[in-house]
Length: 119
Image (cartoon, rainbow, N blue to C red; front, side, top):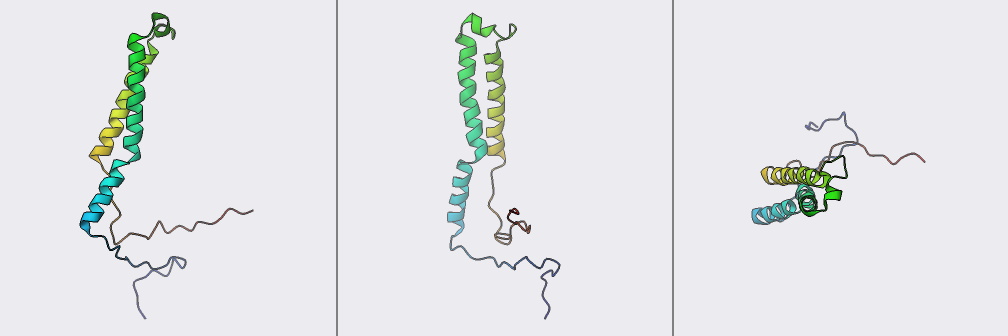
């Protein structure tokens, strides 16, 4: 009996791609939903919200708070840096959206054995 399954990995089971019953429209909708809640977008939005708060505090805050850190308006500069990081995360998420696994490799995993820690 000849098969093209490597025998040097004895604990790796052969996985056949199972049809999910979803057509391409459903898979596209699922991919859009997954991209909508991409962690890069969420963290980028949080950075932008906090950046706006810090920028506003840096601009309209009291002079004593503005110069408390060795004469540097730390709220303003930190807010600007956080805004840059937040915008970069959002641009990254929009430029490189997540893609679902191709059907031929779905369910295979990494092939590593995961063992429980010894007690």
